[in-house]
Image (cartoon, rainbow over the protein chains, first blue to last red):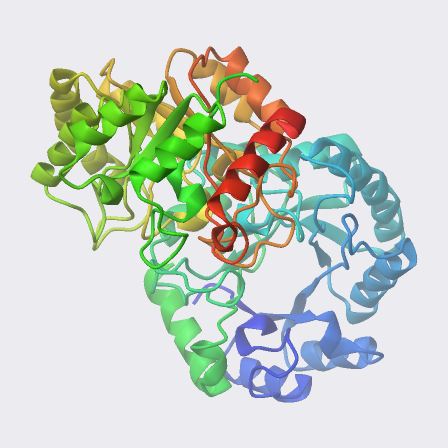
Length: 273
Length: 273
């Protein structure tokens, strides 16, 4: 099987009170036993144990493929730059080459996107400098347009690429998540323009009847996204990293045994991606 | 005030059990008393009374600006072409120059968009021929990408324009709804390319914290959409029709007195659009 990583959100580990509550060590062992190539953790799982957890992953023969994610850089719930720098430092300590960036929403008192994006590029310039010093890359993740307002100001690969161009740091790239971009008819064209900038590829599916904005993502093969076409476009645009499975699924996959979830995602990756 | 129309969804009239349940006649009188220029009805309000209701609107000094909407043309819940033709005939009987088209979702057994869009263009060609005979135009409404899967296969003005180009009928155009397109950084560019094709412009807002995919739209001024910029782009692209206010709002506006809702939407149109 080509290399595949688990994003621990697939086991419910990104939100309190969900998932089976396995420790990072138990997740690492279960992934290694199944031949996975890497793991992407969320900050909340790491705490002060970044070096220890990173070493444990590598001792098990895998990579820490990435870390999710920065606190918001803009919008009503924007963090301080110290908090952003702390997230970059956590990625470095973990040995994660990539930290995903979710931008946060519209700046208070503004409308539309231009003022928010201006503030975003200012803060990203500072963050990218710190990331360069720490040996970490930042992957801007365009989110589905339904997360506009309070979670993001970047909705397409093209949006993210424009911000990369303005910031102009070699440490800034893009994460391409099926859930967020599957609907975009210009995706392949935008990905071609993003050649060399693609730092992450997240696998999941868009369910035909999506019942919840945040927590009803589908396992690959259960939805309507054209996964092979998207993967081909990402690969054609030069992505050589390890794709990761990231399924937020409160009522389906987070209720299952994590071992079954891991087995299923590997099977689906082989058969439908 | 520049001409403005009510889309009766703003009063909850598009869904059973919501809104104050005013009759079409009472809505007409309330709109005329406030100096509105037109009304857009939903098919469910019209039944067999299309001619009667259309005449009543005109007798009150207003226009029937449009009719919402076709049944789905593609996807799991696609209607028969007879049902689509009946919707066109209803618009004609009502004297509505424009019938909005919501396409429906992904064709069963397919993934991605290309097969669904091929079927859509086939069915739209038939529908556009019937519309031409009936003196009605069809306005393709790109819906927000969160309605992918089960409600639409067109997510941007660019998507809709490509379908218009393939079908090639002078009776086919585009409806531009703030809720669905506010996030699109390429909107002004796409609208310029759509010059002459813009048949409708729907006003509302995108709330910073949107709590429901379908029924939590904002009144103009309560959200984060840059309404003046969108209206300018629509106008610059040659739209000379009457914009309509369409706010699906189960927990806020649909609970208010319809008179208060009408007064508010007129005030907001004057002040923030």
